Length: 443
Image (tube, rainbow, N blue to C red):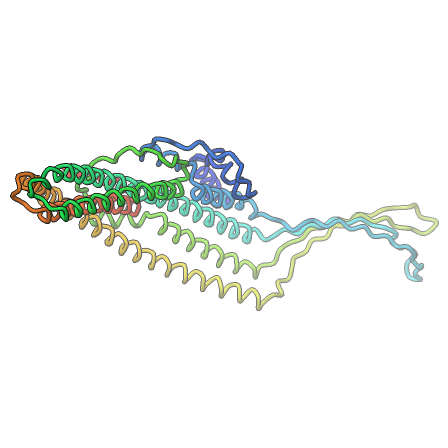
């Protein structure tokens, strides 16, 4: 009983170490969604933010994280219901008419009895152990949601950053197209360029500007995705601070990975569910043990005429008889099956985590490989080729098709680099979420 009480205290202290969600930060949004009042004042939207700011505020403003916190809090509070005694009974009894017996000229006229049943202490210990294990499971769920929240925020932030980078590249390309158009105007008069070349350049420029406008239309949607992931309200035109340059990550050793995966909250949550199953099995076995009840009764007695009027007090002590043999046996069998299932879930969860980690490590290595190839070889050559073709086109030594070909090669390389950078950020965040270890840059 003392060990279980200590477990309950530990869970309460564990809950107290986590800051409560800032309900005021999204109470207006909750009220709007519950009451349908679209006139409710929304929280103040941020016009500028960094990734660190959003990650910090998400710890207390994410509705998903807040929901897991209150499920945990409810499970901790539910531990106090383990010692739940049946309600006491108060009875009053009075004889409206009592015939005198030949054997005994004394009869009971009225009485009051209070009775209370006490559950077997073993049941209380098993139930409290089960509830404490459930609270531990909710705590691990909270930690898992917090890790997943960080990964989701980083992924959504990387998507916005990638869109902004693409918009920058397309803006430079549109400026280049306008410069080439201006350069082609005098070339038409000298015959160095044809009207068809000018029209094609105009088409390329308009398509680039159209893609740029599409990115501007998509950006608010990506900001909303970031807002949904973090719970932090962002302005539709919010400016996000750029992320630092992505460098090759120093991946933990295999031994460190295995140790980190064994402490993953989802795996720990499965272990907690197994402890719940163990405690439920123990509780089902205690159903074969009787409970106790105690009662006290006060009675008023009518004595014969020559005897004084008296009262009496009686005490009752007894035990229950567990007649539900079939139900108790079924409950025990179900608890044993649940225990086996919980052990199998642990094994499957460990396999899933290892497979997911290996997949994310491959994604990270592949994205870093692509970034290294593009930054050291493809992009420098594509930029140099575009500059040379522009110079040759200005002097009439290159055709417009050569310019457009070099243009598309440079654009494809830039977009591939942006995509690889975003994938590297997402994969890195996923590996950190799975292992719980921050990845350091390689020296």
